[in-house]
Image (tube, rainbow, N blue to C red; front, side, top):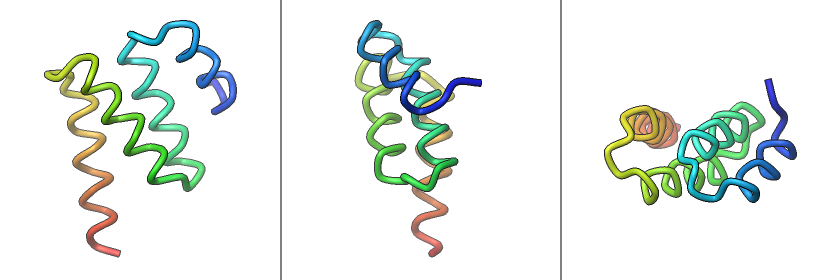
Length: 68
């Protein structure tokens, strides 16, 4: 499992890899950076609009934030 800093570096090295952005979003969400996570999921969807994993993670986080 990669940390946030390692994933940020990986995203910089592979800017068009949507899966890395979802992984970054997951780690950011786990660390409590919900806005950063949403941005990462949105970036992933900007690269690959039909990426179901990014869509579901983004929707779940948005729902959780609405309920708080």
